[in-house]
Amino acid sequence: MEPGKSVRGLIQKAYDSLKASDSDGAKTALEEALKVDFEDPELEFALKCLSWWRERLQNPGFQSGNGGRENSYEKGGFILSQWKSFYGFLDRIGGYEAYDACLYAVRRYVFSSALGFFEDLLGDGENRHDPGLLLMVGRCYKGVGNYEEALRYLGQAVRFRREDGETLSEMADVNALLEETRAAKALFREAFFVEPRNIELRNMESGLILRLADRVRELGYEGPELLEWIPVYGAVYGVFSVKRELKLAELGKLKQTIFSLENEMRISPEKNLIIPRLVNRYLWFIDHLENSGGDPSLIEEIMLKIKLACPVVYEQYRN
Image (tube, rainbow, N blue to C red):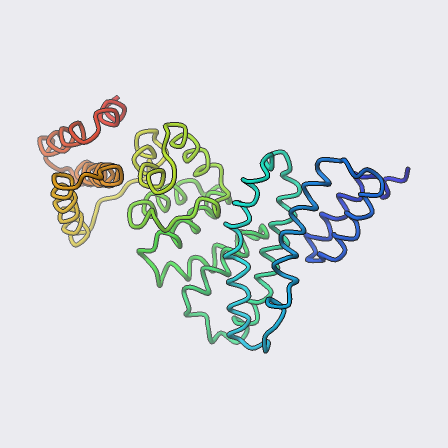
């Protein structure tokens, strides 16, 4: 059989079509492969993924619209919003870890499709001060593997959103993919400090953060708890190792937040989210004191507070 007519060859042809944003060509290639071997597991998986996306992007509701700028923004945003739902679909069917080539092709198709809508909006420069649009364009460039362009747009978005966990985490992720490890660690640490609940791990691609998330997940944490514990164990395991001295206003805000969380700890029956949030801020305070030559006795006092809040973290961080 000719290579291009084998199941493997036709599946690869489908992936190449997807990466070129040609879902019709991908569908044709996969249907041809079905005639050769309809029991091939990768073929079955690829068909399910393609059908899932075509159902959303080829339906009349998505295709309709006046083609104006507002419609382009909505369509691009809709495509990106479906990425998390897609992984929910993958979780239900299971076994997707074995098909990296398929997921890579799908990612290229999805993010290049969204990028096509956003690029029109950026054409004349009118929307280059829209941080939401800059963030989505940066995510798209990351999704298609153009990390330099992703970094450019995300850097612009961060200038408008200096305290936005989602934007900071995307920029951190791109730095990690570019092997700018020091910048990635610093940005991830900031992102998980300011707004961990807004960070979507499904959007992250770098091994640096995914490996850390897996280690924390192995401790039994999921959902919002996982996001709150990641920065704590990032410090414990030495992943979030790039630290800085806080500005005076930041230090004042940190102290106030610690005071509020300590009060909340005393009265709230639900401490599963408060404890990691408080411990993370204790660790930031310690880092600030160490970087600014602070009082060692104050550092010891904070360490004792960590011991009371979470003895396990205290022992691991101490050692």
